[in-house]
Image: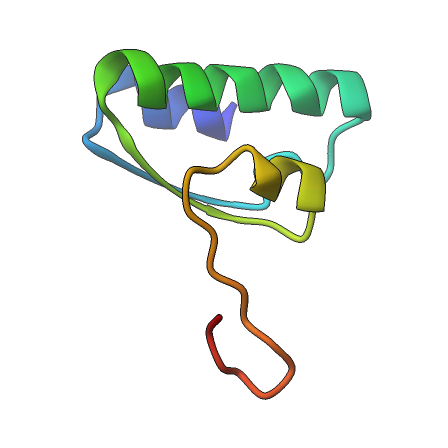
Length: 72
């Protein structure tokens, strides 16, 4: 529901913290598809925080925070 609410206003920027974390694989894939479709079709900028390497792999650019707090 929170993702639907965020998309209703046609935002220029979406910040999603673990948007698929509490979902089963099938539902998580559907949510990710919706997010990435908005990015592609509407030019929305998406900042996505995730521990899921498969979801991260779908992103155009990835930053990783290591155990020391450094970005790579």
